[in-house]
Image (cartoon, rainbow, N blue to C red; front, side, top):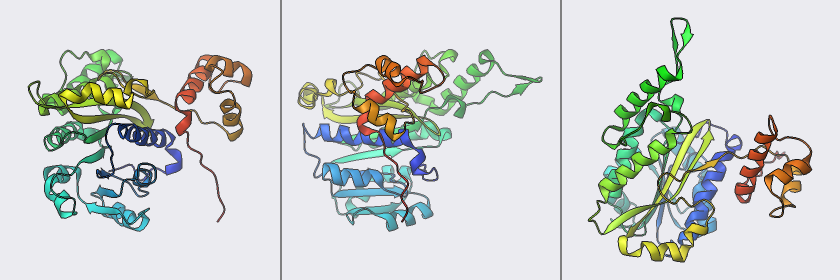
Length: 340
């Protein structure tokens, strides 16, 4: 359910994506404290984001949930602090019984929350977007919600052999589009073309589907609105898309953006089609130290020249790797082998 079977040290992009979310929460605190918010997510076996929410934000009202018994058992064993409460439930049941679940945990029926729905099953994409829509109905101003879904084009439909030949893009992309439309149903955006059924185009389409779910929950005449703050796509075994939103009163949107300096944050998304790509390179410690000593004086092209070798197949790929590192270096993971 939460990708817990992939070794943590191999999930560098996921590590950075998690750090970006925590960094965003700290920025939201410029507008409103999160001390009394309940932090809720599918924490996986390590509950790493709960540890970060507690250590870096100071959040003490922490909830993790999962439907897999073995994951729940590991969560109970690996709790970083005793503040974490563990629920054995599905995302659908949690959303359907949200107020009752919050009340049963001692938080009252309507606490402010920061909740991360971290999905992995591509076949359930429509169900996942519907759960977001249903959740938005019970959220209130200053709540934060994040949804992560599979956005890999091949997870919708993979080309097959026909008459001894692999299907061409002209053959398989319309099939992908048809299958995606069936999954998303009422949240399928209008005007999508078969040529958009690629790893580059699909995240935008899914983001627009999320937008439709948001607008269905908060129509134009409603007092509240869910504002997109950050949209990031990255590879974690397959391509994923994370969309982070904050619920606000319409009258406070501009004040929120001003106090948080949202537009100055490097990972801010100015609308539903402004999607950041996250693809950090695998660097040695020595390479990182060399690059870090030259930040921010050197550009990616200058660093590529000074290194004297390509971090990739060719110079263009090397420059792209370095540009990615310069954007995300603050969150770059440091994994080390330790003998105990």
